Image 1 (cartoon, one colour):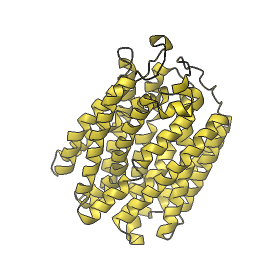
Image 2: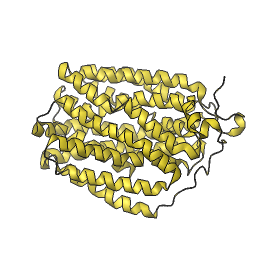
Image 3: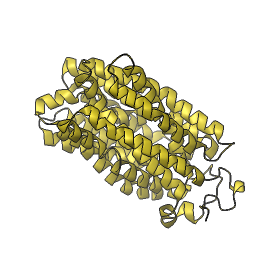
Image 4: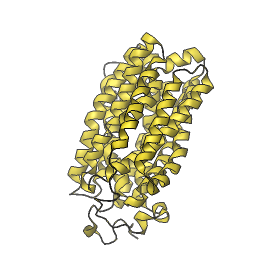
Length: 396
């Protein structure tokens, strides 16, 4: 289900030039489509989080999956630009339920020191689902029209949503070893929790970069580097697929491996990988020769290496009974400051200058993310309560 979540949102990016050609709208307008998706996605998250902390997480996820699958299906019968915007916002609302709740569901199946590896597996859905969306749209769109990929992408969601009725729901906080104090279990404590906020703000800057690159990179390869639309989606999709699988697993494993040596391991792995990603991305953007694709491969790997450890850092920074609310706040912030803004901003700059110039904003965001996470290392909570009597309370 997590994989389908990313397939359904990515298919549009793969066929975007075809939809632009039919609807005759600017780059900024199509950046607005994705921005509208993330605005409604982030506005729905604060509603889903408190609901999930009080009621059945499984039932909320099932309803959300049915809503986003239906909206994906209806996108295939869209015939004007504003209908497209509306249906993409409904997809965002449906997906917000799953993305907000599912990490807490998974976290309650495993202890803190294994969550890096677990989230490495769970968040394989991001690159694999994104890559499948690019490959599906890139293959079906040019051959059968841009609507066909939406028919294909919508169908599995209905089946899996119904299958989730038989999925057992884990006990909240079953494996948590750190006691829930005021910083870890209340809204007031969450507002003052530096471990949570540095991880969240670092993730927001990273999400700004990834959101803009995912929306516009196939178009950049097609428009500025001479790739055919199929080749652009295939190239970028395969890079995301390879980087995502290897980097997600490697990041989670590396974070868990370093955790016994330093409680800031999740922050450290993320900060270093993002710092290395900055020069690699610059080479990918400004070299049109043989170094471009390898540099894009390296940059993508470094950006996606932090997926598992950074999500584990957010989950471990709070207690189980406020975790869904914390994830909801995290999602609201990272999308408000991140990919709700970047697709439109990059499109706006592209209309006036170039896509290459627009991508500079993403590079700056990567550097900011790295700096925030280096700073956040000092606030990382202990993994076992015995390591520190206040268990996550920031030092004076």
